[in-house]
Length: 183
Ligand SMILES: CC(C)(COP(=O)(O)OP(=O)(O)OC[C@H]1O[C@@H](n2cnc3c(N)ncnc32)[C@H](O)[C@@H]1OP(=O)(O)O)[C@@H](O)C(=O)NCCC(=O)NCCS
Image (cartoon, rainbow, N blue to C red; front, top):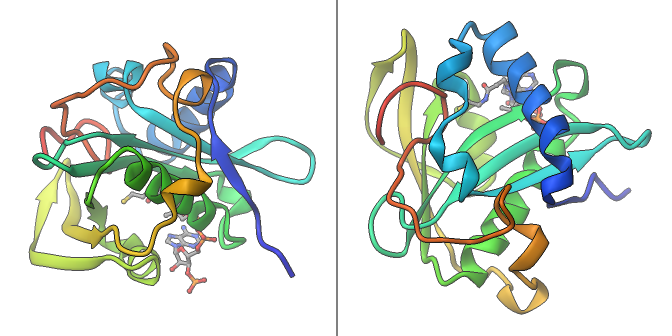
């Protein structure tokens, strides 16, 4: 059986993405709303997955060169609580990996909440270094080299990119959990 298929977001998807992130990070996890959104949202590449009814149930974003030249940051990974465990999060990650490779990135890095560590390990990530506290949540840095992605599959640019429709280099390194400072 085929699992969910994610796609890059268009600017028109932004309200639904933002609402999902608000529910997960602000409402469920208690992150202050003013920290949940940041400047990187305007330039990041956003992805989403929809349920059978067409609702956006998972999202995540990619920030180019966030962890150094050629090393992207992935963050703001969130799935609707009622839709978890069905592969939507994995589908979003896969699209972000393909997109990163297509844009010339060679690795992706993120700060994982330790509760999501297995989720990222299954997607090919390895933890580096010790666990640490950020915003009162235990995190671990995880890295995945982008080998074997298929950039040819993906056309990147135009409407499938940032909320302002552009892909621009960004040094913003904010990552997995909103408001935990630079990664
Ligand atoms: C982490 C998250 C994005 C995964 O999305 P998802 O759509 O449930 O992911 P998938 O269905 O592709 O994979 C499910 C796996 O995620 C892991 N997972 C982590 N937290 C989970 C949760 N609260 N509910 C269900 N699965 C969870 C499980 O290990 C599960 O693996 P399993 O199949 O062995 O049980 C989602 O659980 C979520 O939004 N959590 C709350 C916000 C969060 O913690 N974000 C990540 C911060 S690093």
